[in-house]
Length: 141
Image 1: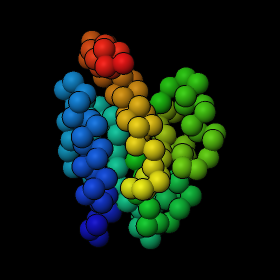
Image 2: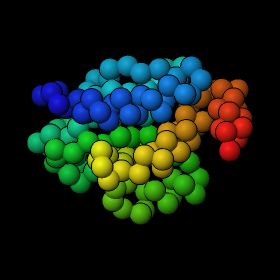
Image 3: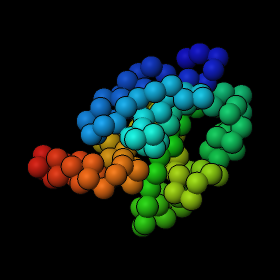
């Protein structure tokens, strides 16, 4: 982990493996941490809160760190459920549909994270790309 609040490499790699399966998704460095995008729209953003920095993330998560968090998009009943259930989830203070989750290499349900990322992708991607991902996921079931 660096002084710039970058997330642990293991977590970034794990999230990257999930997102690389999404059509036209790509990974890039963010102003802090790493984000995954589709057509310049952010699907997810991961960073580590350290000593209360970044302040907006620390305040939203209710934790001065060190703690690694990921923000993503949710909609409908899932948004309502995630933003009211408490730890490890929290409601971001920006964007009406932005949710956060505290990530821990051992305790995180990575299958659930994969599902949350897929849904976030479908919210942010153009309809054709979202349909392509949904069809791909349905074929794997």
